[in-house]
Structure formats: C-alpha cells, structure tokens
Image (cartoon, rainbow, N blue to C red; front, side, top):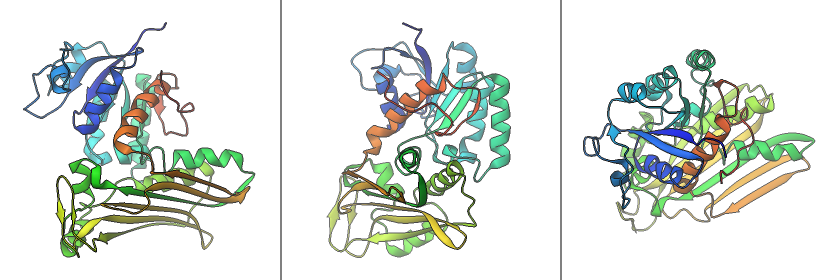
Length: 333
C-alpha cells in the first residue's frame, strides 16, 4: 500500500467540516493540519471541532503561512469563498508552499473565463512548484458541466446541450438558503441581485467550461437571474416565507454561436421547488437524455467531489487543471 496523502483542511465551514470528516474515513488519506479564521475554533483540536469523540492531535490554526512551514503535507483541500479574486492570494500561498490544492471555490472551476491572466500566472506557478491545482464541487464541477461533457463521448455529433437543475433548498443548510434569497421581499432580492450578492456563483463558468472542452467558439454568453416567488406561506428551520416573498432563485446561462443557442443551463434553487432533479438533454446523434430524480445532494456530493478529485490530482502533471484535464473522476475506496 502506498503512503497516505497528507492533507491540510483549509476552511472549516459546513462543507470544510464535512470534507474533513470524509477524509478521515479514507485509509489512503491523513489529516495533518487545519486552517480557519473563526476565533471560536482556533486553537482547538480538530476532532473536537468536528464533533468526534476523540482528539486527532491536529490543532486549528489561523496562521496558514506558519502552519505550511511547519507541516509535512502533500495537499490542501480549500473551502472558503466562492469568488476567485477572494481566494486568489490564499491559493497562491498554498502553491508557493509546494502543496497540491483542490478548492471548492466556484469561480476557480474555470478561472480562464473571467480571469485569464491570473489563471495563466497560477498555472505557471504550479508548474514551477511541480504541483496541481483544480476547482471542483457538485455544481459547478460535476452535474451541470463535467457529467454533461462525459455523456457526449457516446455521440457522433452534438448540436445543442441543455442542462436543468432543480433543487429544493428547504432541508439544506442556512448559508445556502440565505445565498439564494429565501425570505427576502422582491425589492430586496432585486437590489441584492444587482449587486451580485444573491445568486448561484459559477453557472457561467460551467457554460464556458463546456464550450471550451467541446471546442465551440461562442459569439455571446449571457446570464439572467430572477426570483422564485412563494404563492403560499412556507417555513424552514431558518426562515419564514410569506406569500409574495422570495422562495429562491432562478438563473439561466446561455451560449450562442452563429445566431443559434447551443448551450443552455437552467438552475432553480428554491424552498419547495417542485420535482427536484438534474436533467441533461443532448441534441445529437444519438440524442441523449439523462434524468437524476431527486438530484445530486450538494451537501454530500461536494465533499465527495473534493476528496475523490484529490486522488486524481496527485497523479496529474503539474499545472492549473480543470475537471476535463484530470484523470477520470471516480470514488476513492
């Protein structure tokens, strides 16, 4: 048996904690460090932070540079923010320390779209340090992009791809419900949406990733966002929604080439959203349609994507990767 992958968990919010707990179940992985800025958990043993009945001998640090210099590690699993610019310096710090990095940052799934110069700089640094960096998660990272791309392998020709994801957020974590505007008035939603404070981050990255992977040159990429309005009172563990107020978000991303819409991503995340599912429709030869009834549960699947992708990262050539350029993603035993 090969030596275990030594991991530092960077970020201990809901997804970070779930990812750390999953890593502990994998015999080929070993948690050797943890980073978070929350003063309530800094200095505490990671086992205690994760609610385990034992200590792990890993103390949560709020000084990543110091920790990196003192810790024998192979990789960092990074779970902090959604925006690439918000995490860029954190990731640079990880790469400079000589560690592989898998991040849940949504815009890092395909940073070449919005930030090509920064992506190129990061790619160069990864190559210099002989490490790999990639962004992934359930969405973006899998359902609305990687899975759709894999399905095209069975096609001789593809004309258009449409992906729809419907998520009932009623039972999901508070941060996600807040992120999609649950409980806001219509006016509050519109203002926050205009300021890009209410939305699912990464939808356009998924679309740009697909176009790039398929070799399609798009003349236009557009994104729209609108509120899902409750028609009856709805109560979740965290919010009470009145009729006429916001139950969630509905977003579209479209890619047009030669005057024809070739890619469409349709995402609805709302309390009580009907018929939750993930649906991929490929118009091609042969035409393909995949429906995952109930949809892929993000709170479970995102930690799985991070841990399973990490196993592919340590096998890959150095550089800034996407889910297309890594080895075929699959479960780690």
